[in-house]
Image (cartoon, rainbow, N blue to C red; front, side):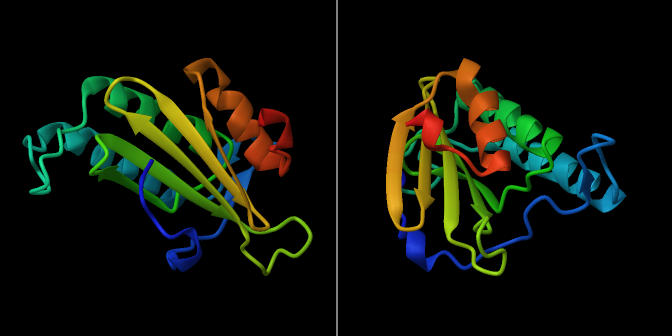
Length: 158
């Protein structure tokens, strides 16, 4: 897993912005443009050289890139905006999401992370109200995890 301090992340973007769930489309074309930009960023990871970070880290593999693209596509289809998408020194790509608490939409105490490893594994981390859980997630369960993030009920995953 990526070694990050979950409580110290400051990059927070609005959750489910500019999305109409009834129409199933983005109401702001800039949001759709952002999705394209993030997908281009993920594709650019294929151009990273070996040891790209000076720590001996392997460049993201095709499998990691394809899984990250799959997850980002599914997130945007549900109107969920990733806060950050980056390669890691753990031979993976992480996709992080902050969501407001359902009880208090002004408080951002829900954090989710998908990590796509070079060997094809996907790990899902959730931190809700101080409780942290990590699971290996089969690709076939990604949509279920995203649906539960959208609904605010990820307990069934764990």
